Length: 570
Ligand code: ATP
Ligand code: MG
Image (cartoon, rainbow, N blue to C red; front, side, top):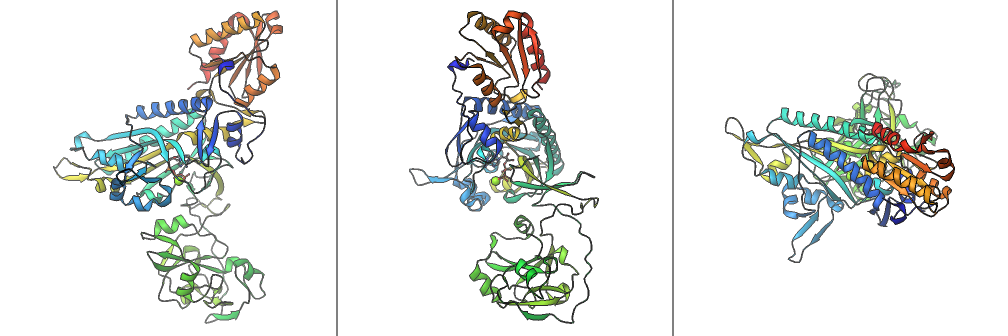
C-alpha cells in the first residue's frame, strides 16, 4: 500500500461534538466518518481494523466448532410476532412496509430467525450445534453516543447454541466464555466478566464482558478480594445493620410546606436525613399502580424492577396516574395506610423504625414510621443501586463501582425462541423437546473503539499489532531522492514478501507531517528511511507503544522488523 495513492484523511482538530477519546481519535486519524446521527462510514483504515477484528472473532468461533451463516437483514414481522418481540422491541427496531404492505423489521439480533431455521432439526443426534454470523445490526438507539461505541447500524458477531439439555447449554456457554476470553486477549483488551441482567432477551443467566473506561455507559461493582463482579443493574451488597431508636407508637403527621424532594426534607427543620427517609416511587405494571419503596439516599434500579416483577408493560407512573392512585403529587407520597395497591420494599428497609415518609397529602409527611408495623409490604426485593465502598455480597470486603464499556454479552436463553418457532427434536426416548438455546454477541466496531479508549497518548492511537490498520509504516524522509526511495522500496518489498502488512509513506510532504500522521494513526512500527541514515548505512526502527528507537543495518533491516512484528502477533 502506497500512502500517496491512498485515502487517509487526517485532521489536526477534534470533531466539534466529540467527548470520548476514541470518537475524537478515530475521526481525526481518518478511520470513520459520521453521515447522520449514529450512522458511520468506515473509511479504508477503519475497515482494515474492523476486518482484522472480524477475522480474530471468526477464527475463535470456528475453533469452538461454530458454523458461519449469513442471515438477511430484513426480517418478516411474523417471526418477531411469534416471539412477542415485535411489540416488545418498541422504537429500537427499525421497521417499514414493503410494496405489498407487509411489515418488515431490520435485524437487530437474530434469535427469531435462527430459531426458525432450527425448526428443521429432527433428532437429538444432530445436537449440539453452534450457529453464527458476523453481520450488520440495526438499532434505533435513543441516544447514539461516543462515535462508534454506540451507533444505530453496526457489525455484530452473534452466535446461538442449540442443545438438547441444560448440561449442553452450560457447556456451550462455557465454550463461548473461553472463546471470548481469547478474543479479547488477542484484541489487547483487558476485560472483566460480570454477572448481568438478561433484560428483554429472557433467559436465566448472562455474563457481560466489560472494559474499564470513562467512555463507557455501564457501571459495574467488583470486589478485588474475592472476584465478585456484577453490572449495577444486577449487583447487590451488604449494608451495616441500621440502629434506629424506637419512635412513637404510631406515625405522626406534620406539615412540610414546599417540600418536594428528599433533599428538601433533609434541609427542612424537623425533617430527616436521607438515610432515614422512605422514598416512594410509583410504577404502572400492566395498568396497575405498584408502590416501590427505597431509602431516601438510594437510587432505584429500573432493570431490577423489570427483572423481578412480572408484567408485560412496566413503566414509571405519570403524575396524573399517581394522583389518582394516592391522592397526592410526587414529593408527598408514602405507603402508610395504603391497602389497595401492591407495595414492594427494598430489603434495606426491612426492620427499619422511626422513619419519615410522605403522607399522601400534598405538603404533609409522616414521622415515626416503623416500616413493618405501618406499611403493608407485600414483597421484599433488592431494588437499590449499590454504592462504592459497600460490602461485597460474597465476602463483605468493600466493593468498587466503576464505569465500563460492554464489549461482549453471553446469555443462557432456554426455550423461549425455540418454542415460539416450533424448534424441537426427538430426545433419546423418542420424546419431542424444544431445543435449548444460548445467544452470544460481540460488537465489532465497539471493540475497535474500546481498544482505542485504552491505548493512546497525546500524539494519537497506539494499535496492538493484531488489529493495526497496517503493522508497519515506512516513512520515506526524502521521496524525491532516488536512493532514499530505492532503499525504502527494497525494505517494503522484503516486508511484503514476508507477509507483513506494510504501508509506504511516499508522499511529498515534510517529514514532520509524516511522523505526526503516523503517530496519530498509530501504526505499531515505523521504519524511517532518510538520507542521513543511508549515508551511515542504517534506517531507524521505532516502536509506537513506547517510543523506543534503534538503528538497523540497511541491508538486514527487514529481517529485524519481521521478527519484531511476528513477536507481537498472536
Ligand atoms: P447496550 O447495553 O450497550 O445497549 P446490549 O445489551 O443492547 O448493549 P447486546 O444486545 O447484548 O447489547 O449486543 C451484543 C453486543 O453488541 C454488545 O456487547 C456490544 O458489543 C454490541 N452493541 C450493542 N449495541 C450496540 C450499539 N448500539 N452500537 C455498537 N455496538 C453495540
Ligand atoms: Mg442496547
